[in-house]
Length: 245
Picture 1 (cartoon, rainbow, N blue to C red):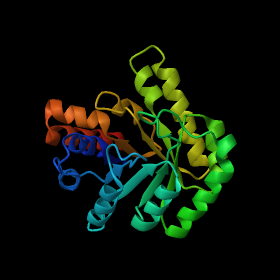
Picture 2 (tube, rainbow, N blue to C red):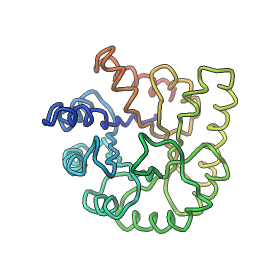
Picture 3 (cartoon, helix red, strand yellow):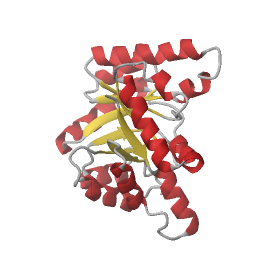
Picture 4 (cartoon, one colour):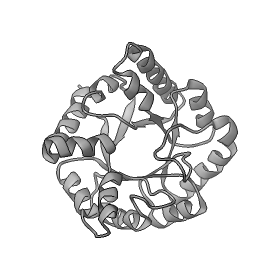
């Protein structure tokens, strides 16, 4: 079954907007775990505008107590970020090529330009005992280059799917992701996915059977505001379960 990892960045953003520890990120992680999610994700950016380094430390400590819940930390591999991964040792680290001036992640790695660097980082993660993943566009050539770098998984950047889901390009775009996932599996890579997946489009996307994990935050947070947290999280878990049948 595809695992659901909830990204708590938007909870952290709400907290930061008021300058108090409310809402508390750890409390929300616990609530999500109690509802049955299989993972928690944060993306501590360089400016700490939402999830912070301390959030990452606190969540790492919390999740150590749950055998069946994984902690995924996303981010750009700066020296500070890599030191944080060394310190916290999450189950998975997803490398994202985002600059400090980006509002959100908006593209995958160019493996032609970054293969040497990703190979070195992959070796570092193996030394730490952390599963490695790289954020990629749905491009079979990029997937092939990533497989040569010794990393464990890819995370397919799904904004294009989300945009095209409501257009006549839906099937063509879906097939790009399907082909990329199949290629990754043939090359021995695990496949995750994330960015703008939501309750409307996730079931369609999970017709790709190779998807091991989806990381969802922005849409899930908005849907929780509209429909209630319990209903939304249970609905996501049901979609993941039904996709496995």
